[in-house]
Amino acid sequence: MICFDKELFENITKDIFSCDSPTGYTQNIINKIASYIDKYHYSYKIKNNGALEVIIPGKNHNKVVASSAHCDTLGLMVRSINNDGTLALTTLGAPITATLDGEYCIIYTRDNKKYTGTILSTSPSSHVYVDANSKNRNIDNLCVRIDENVRTKDDVLKLNINSGDFVCYDTKTTITSSGFLKSRFIDDKASVVILLMLLDYTSKNHIEFKYDTKIYFVNYEEVGYGAAIIDDKIDEFVTIDMGCVGLDLNGNEYAVSICAKDHSGPYDYELTTRLINLAKDNKLDYTVDIFPYYGSDIGAARRAGKDIKGALIGMGVSASHGMERTHIKGIINTLNLIYLYLI
Image (cartoon, rainbow, N blue to C red; front, side, top):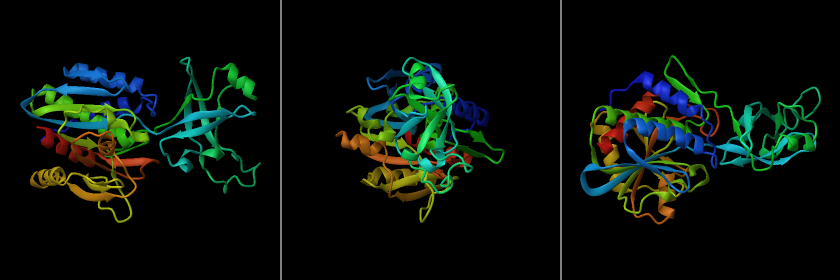
């Protein structure tokens, strides 16, 4: 199994999590990932839709296997400009919007300017609005207060801020002394980190992959079609995403979750069983679970007509699509399970 490098993990985590990459605005993080792949000396290509495909010849050529993580995150976009100079919003993916009230953000314009702001309730002051505490924090009741001298819609337009500009909110990424990673967008940037650590390890140690392998960093997962672009010749596909925590689920932040079924139906029986046995035989901390309100890149690939065996693994993540948290032990277990599968 992989000897975990904590310093490497912290360095890659800070680098990847600091790069804003909401669905539809992922070119910067794809370029960052490409710079890592260059250092590892693996071949890759960037697909037409912006996703990155790493191409690794294996010891055996009788099967093609794949893994993936999605580098796109939840986010927001400017829906319109209000008469008072604030920005109305629309969601990218499905963030828990109640958690966004009070978050600092950056507005990215189409002419490559950046402006800071704060996401606020449209009743943001208890001294002014009787419903400041009780108002629903849905997306229609949130806006962005821009940190510029703007008081009207025309003032905002003069900054070249327009409908369709991206709004990215602060990740607050923190690694605690007790081993927790807490941040926005652990779903799925922690999996991006896992795959980069895997490729760093196999490159440095000259480790061959068992079969011809494709590693994908996809960029439209949060809106449902990230892995639609995978190669038609792939036989097996194990995607890495987050594992759910809560209610009657088995998953926890310290283990790797192996998903048997999500809202679209069961994952491949034989491949899922093989992953369970790999985890069991190698004494990994793992759980097997059902995710009732969840979809993954396996579903996207299947809907695109890919003839694959598909399975899903991932570290347990608390408070998904809100202020998320996982533990380094869950990351290590997930890293080792994908290593055992591919090597």
